[in-house]
Length: 236
Ligand code: UDP
Image (cartoon, rainbow, N blue to C red; front, side, top):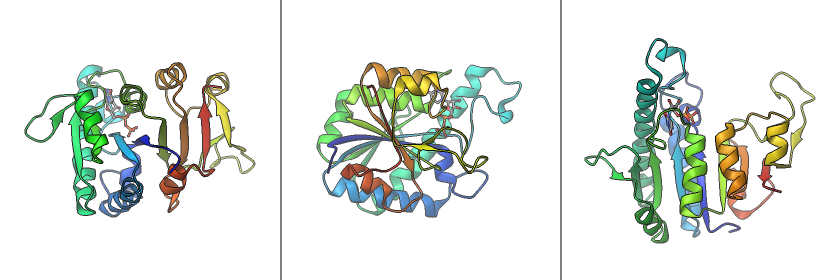
């Protein structure tokens, strides 16, 4: 394995498969199996889950709502995803803990950095739910923050596309996929892979970001082995 400690960012949309809303159990089970493979091979894995499949603070559904309140609803949505993923991981015999940035002690541990690191050392997957606990942030920023806190070597951003392109590959058939980029180039070219706060955190803390297609079977494994998949973005 190329990496010892990895932070995997799963967007909420990744969990809904072809559905327009909610959670697709088959997809979650498939992701759990792929995660299980790398964990059984010794990778320490933390996961930050998004909530966009259920609720987003800035979405149409929240129109008219106070932004902070809408964001709290969004953060609660991520906890549903976290508990679902935990259940799927336990079904493939991967010990898993959910830690939330908003305390809800009946269903999850509170986020405690040292405790999260201890779980990782013991081979448990740690899923971080409820984002950063702060409105006006995203789970991408949470991923960058938690990766820095726990000393992850890399962030895997597993998405629906197979990397970062110079234009939208769905609209432009000549779109070019980058194999390697620097964070500064991403900001200059306005390539919207993550929000600027998340990119700034990765850049400052020199945490590489690997963007790849979650739905190509075996990609999580290949990424963990250090094979060329998707686009690698580094501080340069
Ligand atoms: N959110 C927040 N603070 C955080 C993380 C998330 O307020 O630190 C809220 C925000 O409303 C966001 C929603 O939770 O729209 C779901 O997260 P996100 O949009 O990042 O999920 P994804 O796009 O990865 O599915």
